[in-house]
Amino acid sequence: MAEPITIARPYAEAIFKIAREANALTAWSDTLANIDHVMADARIQAQINDPNNNHEQRSQLILGVIGHVLDDLGRSLVNVLIHDRRLALAPHIRTLYESLKREHEGVLEVAVITAQAIDDAQIAGLVSALQEKYKQRITISVVVDATLIGGVKIVIGDKVIDATVRGKLDSMAATLTH
Image (cartoon, rainbow, N blue to C red):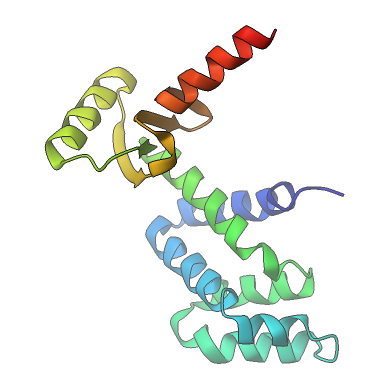
């Protein structure tokens, strides 16, 4: 069976194409965020997954909650996802869409995982260095993970720079056992 992200990709790409052509990238970000937030609610999930509810009832439920903040295309998307039984893919569709949007806007998303909190000056220095290296705008998120012992791990797309003590110990252990 295909991975959810694989099934979600054509939806995200189609939405991105529509958004780009209409110069409505931010509006579609909002639309997808609204759908995603509604789908995160356990009570909504229970109603959506209830086999006794048909497409129309599911549509009325979702649109009854967020229909007033969606335009016609947003409401159509909800109906398509319900009809195709893909409403559960909303978080994946949103993630893929936001990735396409960042790529289109020339923004590189970077995750920094550290053993200890880092201050604003360190973050600014890291952003500056990454912008210089990648020649793109950088958005950065910092997560503190005490299990790292020390150091930092930087995740840029599918590239990982692991300068953590845990990473070095794991690397050394792998070298010694092979």
